[in-house]
Image (cartoon, rainbow, N blue to C red):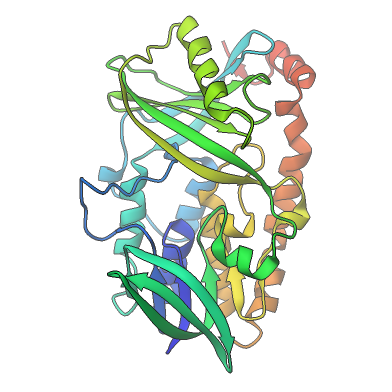
Length: 353
């Protein structure tokens, strides 16, 4: 019998387990293996691996310091914006920590209290309501195992199985497919590149340098010729001089884009959602680590007073996340409306010459 079962050990799930692991009996499960490295079974999440200013602030607020071996060259202090629709380019000063995302996730897991039960290489199957809580079922070592718990926390990202079970697809944020490919690139590019092109997507694409590699990613609408549009993007960038010949690997994942505050959903009864599973991810940039850390911190604080009434306390604490999502949606037209974006870029406001 557990007090809390956390499904998903990304930044949201791992941070929550770290914060509550000494107070409650906790089970943390994840389909990846974030304890024992296996080169034949990588655990990479399809992520650019940039720690944005909001995420840096949350790391500081949590009293954590990132080990230097998680960081990768180059560290980035600028964003190059390429508007293919309007044939414009601008450079803006921004500050990012460039990191190895897999090492970051492993580090967060490594600082979880030893009293937390961890099950990796584990597939969450389902749950049923029972007196006093829930019975969950999961597959571990090819065996179906049952466990009882008072609380379930869904930290399982976009297309969260926990959210699907409890919300019946009501107010689900808009979904995109993120495709990201790695290319060998001996020449260093000293900035993060954001690419806008309505022919490709109504969201955006990105280029991120990592040591001797270049990551090219794009957030694309499902069932909208995603692979074809990604290939068009590569052809356009090749014409601009980017070397995309030596591909190393391809990654993919679903991501949420909450365009309404109502699409942010924290759960019901004894089931809570954190991070992207709750719809807590930037609708303008798809940055999610800061929201994962913040929502898991709020849930941990809500549980400090006990399990009874924790969801009501959590609902009160996340009001600033809802406000943040609203503000970012109000700002989005300046980025994603071609005419407004053209005006902003042509003005040169806040750009670096």
